[in-house]
Length: 158
Image (cartoon, rainbow, N blue to C red; front, side):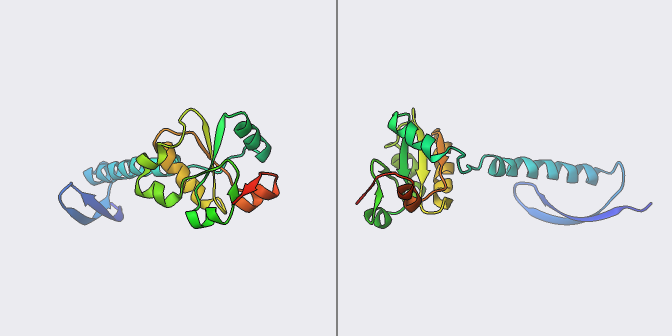
């Protein structure tokens, strides 16, 4: 009988071992491999499925929600970037502080409002959103950075 040969990794909690197996219909090894695939899929699913994405809300919607006090704007750039200019009314919560101590840093944010997070290009605000969402915040990272927000009509201050 011809079978399929596979090299697979087995982990029993204490040791790792690698085995070369020949898969044949009805063999115990096939079931072990199938279980391993299921476990790996379940372990990776939360990492892939829950990633924050840039919001599809328009800047007009963002501005309207902030003006109606239904949302707050959070700048996740670093202090040195903020000091060179920032959107008036935005809160500074640097990504580096969130990564160091998310629970303490996030306490400054309202849980009953939408958090619109921005940075320069959209990368850091997505990372910040992932952190804040795990703490129970509704976060919508926005793609436009500080310069684009100012160009779109958000008031700037230093």
